[in-house]
Image 1 (cartoon, rainbow, N blue to C red):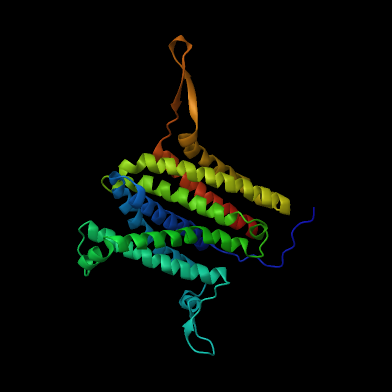
Image 2 (cartoon, rainbow, N blue to C red; image 1 turned 135 degrees about the vertical axis):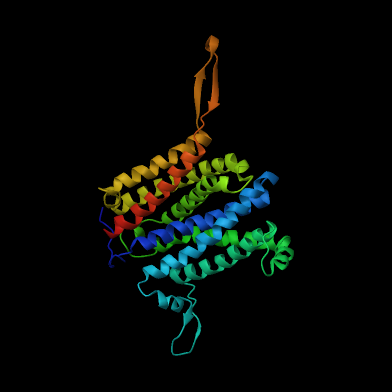
Length: 312
């Protein structure tokens, strides 16, 4: 089978872009989980919901910082949003450009994350200029609309980095259509893990630990499915050896191992034999904190393997 033909040079991205891809997934995933807990969770899930929103904004703010540093000329970042061409200044929005869509999507998501962040602070009793107005405006149905819109944008932010890679002409990245879904599933799983690790910082958030662990099991299953599609499409394109060859196979092994605890915690059970030969099924329990750490390590390892196996 002939290999895919490519006509491009590697972008030579540095570690800043890895941080950007990582934090974008966590920010979008955290906001979505916060909305789900707020709209469909129990009253005891509200502390974890608010924690999700408090995490989403700082994670989002770091994204454009890392992105502009990686550009090499951070002072010119604003040109991605404002056109200063011969026709005069105007908004630079190209709906056919994944890069342009990503910049504007991140900006719109940042607005929703900021509004909800301020609303949570006001709800918590933190006084700041305009806090009463924010509580009045966002404490009801309007705030829930912001949550829903922000969640849709959060899904976009978490997954579009993978789509951006897929629509390039770079070997490996353009040879599969699974990267968008893989990055999204990984971002959701990582966000759930981050919430579990930070739950002790907020009183009452630990009550949602079991629910978050169960959600992580579902996200891990989704990520595993996209990994199968990824390796299948890369094998068909003749790029699998490049992707999983040395030294990248170590990182992919970490990715797969990171999926085992959340999957075991949700979907598997063990057989124990009691007195008289009676058998009973009991759920396997895995340390939530240890599982969360491993999930985050796997999230990082996957992005490193995807980004730099193609570049190097």
